[in-house]
Length: 223
Image 1 (cartoon, one colour):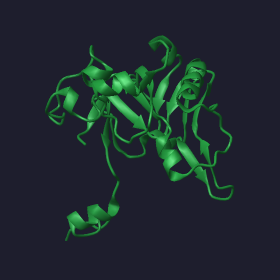
Image 2: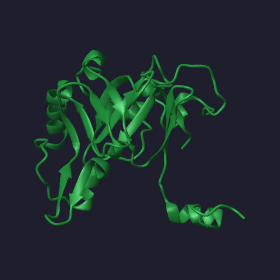
Image 3: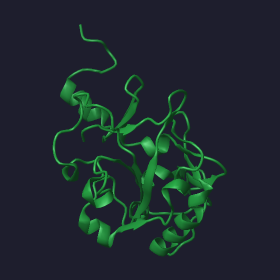
Image 4: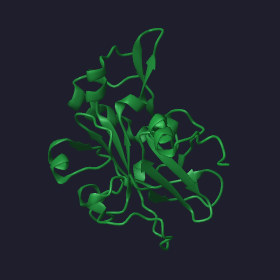
């Protein structure tokens, strides 16, 4: 999908973002693209204010393996999870078939979009039609907000020794949140320091297909 850009809210150090909302999407799914029909049937917004979501700093850090969210969303997250799945959310191991894993809720995070001057690499088209933009369904007042999709296959880590999946999306942070590497899986991420923005593009990360289309190893410079 095309790359869409969130605003970097920190002037120095880690890249920071402002969160608008967090949803759990019933039935799973990989892409962030959301329709109005999804909103009425599958999307469950956490009853948490923007102020609570952004308590402390919210940073994007590819060097942190897992995702750690402020404890202020814990109650709403766990309540909504149980409403959808019928099970308590915990970090204990779960034995899951591939089908059961895929059917677990997808975590959807809505992030404030980049509001600076156009650079020229922004997507063309209506926000409703561009994967990664919130559109009218998720953010009618700010349709170019960025939507990050975290399916269960990314936040549930498989432990081959115990043959269980363990949740690696945490809601226990005392101050601030870290959007870590498992939230970035399935995306190309571009940290644009000079322009103060961070880009996300949904990607299948299919290396074999890339080699087929490029015709050579991308690790070797062209002759």
